[in-house]
Image (tube, rainbow, N blue to C red; front, side, top):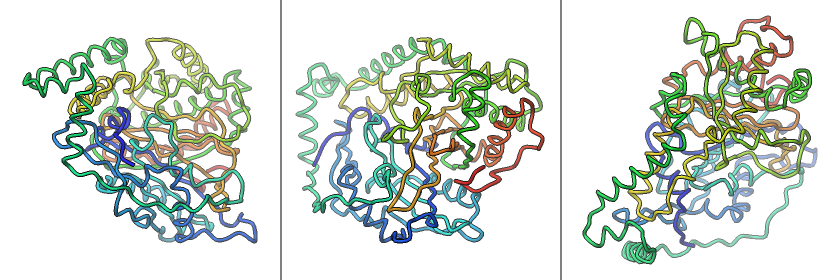
Length: 492
């Protein structure tokens, strides 16, 4: 079935470029040892069969993006006539001893590689050889496949809430006919002319697109500038706004959910305040590793989903996923200059509570500012102009789930850890994601390798940050240079 990319999808498609990771992903850690005795082993052929059966739930994963000649309209979703699922689902293995550091290095290298735009924009890796007999599944999905966040990422499609693996009815998929270039061009012109007021009229009337292009850019800049004028120039100077390459590093860590809840109760703040407090501790330690000292009152500015401030439930809810796209966000400050952990946490809570209710701190994202345009140069330019305006409004994006994810299974094999791989734009050097899975809080960090070359240390900083909140002082041990335990374990 042929359809046109929505403005949301086109925005993400055209933001993909050098220095921008325009895709999301998930790292699932599985433990085959916990599979029921009568369960089938999960190998590459079985994973291929499982995914092939589930693709009918996400038909876009068998389509390619086809651009329109001369940029006369947004690109089209077209069935891939040569779709080969074995190209997208790959088998990989870690060398001995299969440590977490080796897994993180593999994830960083996979995420660094661009997609082949002549094929559907997703990949999946079954990774064997992890220590303790574990397996991992890494997914990589272009953000245009997720639109504004109302679609599932492929990792959410293949997981179940029970060990049973129900099969969907047989899917006898056949690719639809691919439209010819002439019909695509005529269709784009016809569609554009049917919408009065669109800038395509200037192309046909001889007025030329350049003047309209500049007008549109000016209007976009004014619109967004008015919205974030209090923010654009106020983010602290930081190397975190210097990302410019596609080389990535990835690391992860997790802490006890119960410990976070106990800390929230002790300090009379919310669960997510504690999570932000941990992130603040991580950023404080990292900043001290790249500069000699921190001034009292120094901050890092972060953007995160507004929904995490509205959360009321502290127990698991069925359903729900872990890829969060297209939601309203707000900008807050992380007080990394404060020495005392308890005072720092209370400051984090107070600032987040204040700014989550301040209209000038809202960051609706790019979508709210994009007009419903059909002509590609305007969509492309608008997206990049707006992205540039938001470049200095914050230092680091933080993805946080607003619910606890209940236990999941892939082909009957228990998932013992879920780490989401956040997108990273060309104007940022670090992106952080946090989700609650089972009894753990899972932190994942993606960074520009050329800016945050010591990223693996952040996993150790997570453990130090929760320890200092537990003890009320600074940790008794020096910061560790990376994860100290295995993913999915009690202190990973």
